[in-house]
Length: 215
Ligand code: CTP
Image (tube, rainbow, N blue to C red):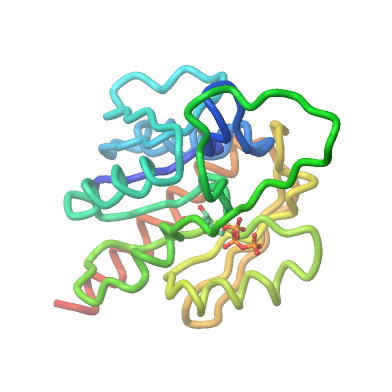
């Protein structure tokens, strides 16, 4: 099977030297890419800027902004069986990008932000989709309620809810896996490599099941 995986943060430019971003390390997405390859799958890894080497044998696409990630994902979904959107995409970007460096002053400065496009939601809206759609939900509270809301609103097959305070910049994570049919599964705090191998098995089984149902 072919996995499409997004990973890492995005950067939204303010001017040529400044941007808005977040603390995502990309470790979870890269671990899933590695585990997918180890299990014999093809992997397309679409990544924002991180300090990690892409695993050998992935089709690696490096992006910076949420718009670049959006375009890259849409270009590759039709050749994918399982799309795992793990990236911490910025929710807002500056309304205007200054073409020159903004100079310092003594007055207050406000930045106007506009929403970015939601990549996961845009895939969930595709009526014709044949791929399994997996999203992540980075939360700080009410994991199950917030994860279930994202599962429905973004029309995913699976949402992996996790506590952002445990997950961000860490080698470990704890997961609550929520399935479309209401089933749920918890995996207690473990190294991201271990979690990634478990997730790859879960995703492959779910995709297999949905293919069998369609036959
Ligand atoms: N996501 C995306 N495009 C965006 C924002 C989020 O594809 N512009 C995806 C993420 O990759 C993740 C899922 O949506 O799979 C949920 O992301 P998360 O940051 O947890 O939630 P948001 O939708 O951004 O909502 P909120 O920040 O309010 O929790």
